[in-house]
Length: 211
Ligand code: A2P
Image 1 (cartoon, protein in one colour):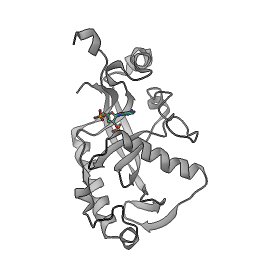
Image 2 (cartoon, rainbow, N blue to C red):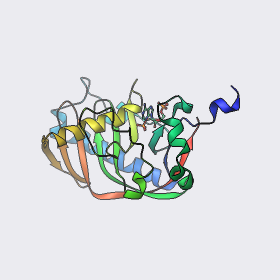
Image 3 (cartoon, rainbow, N blue to C red):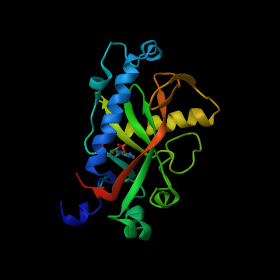
Image 4 (cartoon, rainbow, N blue to C red):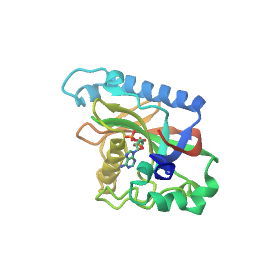
């Protein structure tokens, strides 16, 4: 294809530095391992088969937090986002992301990212649109850590929004366990959220991915 047709990336986002990718992957492995051993989890398994969670979820490449999915310019609002002067001025800059929760559903495992006001300037206005609830901008911010067989990474944000919509709806979930990493809550239908006692600080570069 002529160059001008591929001038927009597949997506923009924050890409975790490789040293911290390792740390986040280890933390998420620890979480899955521990989850697998809990009585509360055994009684509410996310799949019919007795599977090892670490095998159930397949890793999904370099860890990142997508800001705008552009699909090479085909996604709605892609051009506007790419041309935004704030986005332009921050392109290539370093940020520190704060990972505040880990979550698991029958489809995905991910980390919730709590954005600062400066980081929110890079957040597209339509990111939370897919949710029926009206959640504040940045609610969807996350890092996909793994997907079940046949599940696309886009599902992770949908799963997170679903849990946040339940919380907003006043459903506090079932407190399941105090873990070393934090407190674990069950939201039904195989949805688990671990609020981290200590948020993980993750240095990341704001950039884009062409694939
Ligand atoms: P996520 O940000 O949840 O990890 P793919 O490999 O499927 O093309 O996706 C590339 C990246 O873009 C992934 O990180 C993915 O999900 C994200 N992504 C894919 N489709 C969408 C979409 N429709 N809206 C938002 N993010 C998307």
